[in-house]
Image (tube, rainbow, N blue to C red; front, side):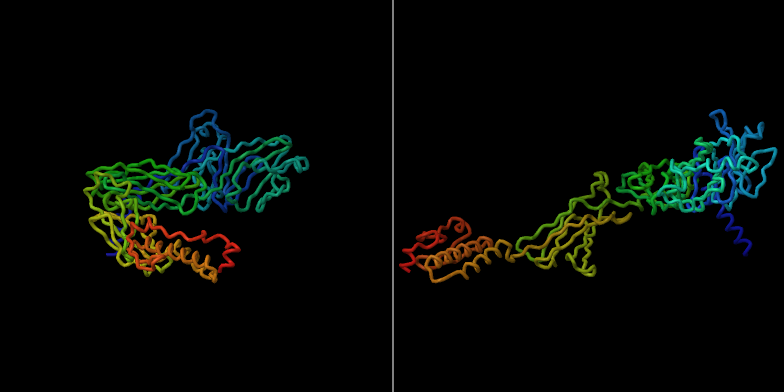
Length: 506
């Protein structure tokens, strides 16, 4: 039984591995460029010797023609080996990578990389190097002459000098060798060896993290819209990647590659699939390939049906208004999502509204499900309290809830004193405190009181009952009369300083 289960597991695993094999290859670095992962050790020599994590990278001159003279084959264990066809006729021209601990064959220049090394497989590095004239860098002669005349530069700066952080950088006794213990992202740049002010070696080094394993997500904004798939990395990418979406719409079909775009502004890969009305309930399978010179990664396979990934945009034009005369009611209105097309009206949308008093805890939040209309009246608002209101939507039968709309704020109608009313009250109280037995002050205060009474009647929108200032008899006034009423004229304006005659008469 155990043997049968093991065989079944192998048979089930084989199709999965064959799907990804050879579909998402690492992007090759251009000649003369070495790409390293942070933390790798690097040793450079003026004679062109390059070592990464102890593995020797053996290179030679570039081919004389523009054509690629190398061929790439795959071994039984899945490793890639690169063979230079030029080396078949001239063993002095070697291309490829040779790992420490692997012997090079005299009849072939085929080399492989060590699996324990962080140096990328089958990467081809072609630095420029010129032998040192008059000196043997291996040490037989010219040692005294080389010392003090050889120096290393990084991006034009002499290594070991200046205010740059040279932590981890060391040079040999004769300075013909440069070692970097653990390369950092900021150590990327051009490394050159100069002897007697002449450049003898040059190599561009790029330090970058490989892409992380992507997490693919796909959605539709409306039943008739295109399918949009995207991925946003959790950490910024050092090198710009290339993104590809592999899609399968039927079990019998192969995966087809779709070119995706990468937005540097949003640091996001995104892909678009055309809409097909007949495939809304067809099972799709997709996975994302992300690759650059630092490495490559693929997402897990995402199965979906187009209608199941329907996620509308939030409702638009959300607004709230007061219900005049009702202290606990507010009416909220909204419109279809801006991306919801007219031909999609066959599909019914449902809505969810949430509201809560500003500054209150989340436990006080109210949720309401609305069907068949695009408005809702809140009937349990607290008078004079400001509320935050949001709305979201979903297809009635399929798909996902949209994001919540941007919050809108509102409060119910209230007859509480307004700011202008409070100012009038404050003015009246101040004038009353200044009242004395002077007749002019009495007349002025009486006039303020009458104006205040009328003002209160106007804002309360009701009939008023005030007394005539001459006869002291009640006088009923309607709203339309309040705007035309005039008061009897008293001597003086009520604001002038009393004259001497007035003071004597009083």
